[in-house]
Image 1: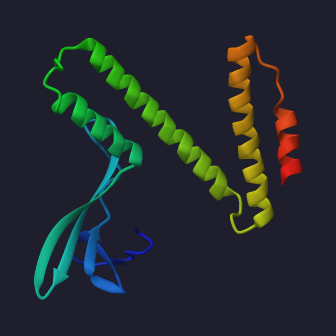
Image 2: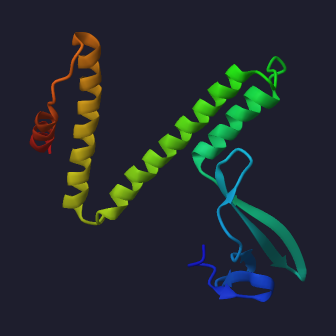
Image 3: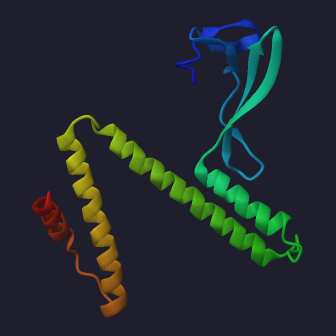
Length: 167
């Protein structure tokens, strides 16, 4: 946002030459922490049109945060059977939240890895895709092997070789 809203106006609001009617306050510390522990970007905005100023708030949060909010709302606030002191529900909800947070971090790591490699270079993209598919195949079949025969044989190199052959 700071890249696009790069001209400082009055009261700390930034705007862009292309549309000076939309202004965002970008000097506040971000992200802020919500009560549920997830981070959220809350950015005050101002839309100016025909000598009128309309205030708004821009909220940016992860899909995991949105998903957690839906779960929390349905289980805690909409469920009349739920007792606030119910330790079991609290523990389950905490576990779900921690798992969602872990998934969010893992997805971010995958995204960062793909973005780190020059995404314009087709050879680099191909190599990253090979590695990802090789890992997926290994994870699926090693889990199946563990469940079916009780142990795992490390066949990662075989998965890598198969991917190189396919690509």
